[in-house]
Length: 158
Image (cartoon, rainbow, N blue to C red; front, side, top):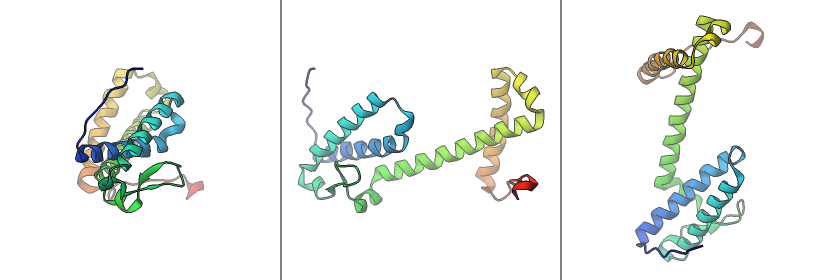
């Protein structure tokens, strides 16, 4: 394996360390669904980057040996204010709403057409109809949030 040297400013190293922390945070949440050798390779690289970043006093003072994961990571006080935390929060929020709207659109399609008719749709037709419903739902959610959405439970669950 060929090794490559990389020269970074302290600022670049801080950004790279935060990117590594973000990747480790994401992989920690999704690890069970992922390809284990690839996850391990990314984990190893990110941990190595954090270990290197720790050597710089301007970064290392914000890091500690995390007992939960067993490697150097940013302290909670730093994580709470870090840019990568903001990115992760925005991503989670966006993914939540996208998934909610998609599932609601799929459910509406099945409820309106019935299981049998919905299952007979081609992939293209189903995607077009779901997309149309998603647009309407996005408009509703963006305009009114959840205020005007109604969730109905079957009588045995209410």
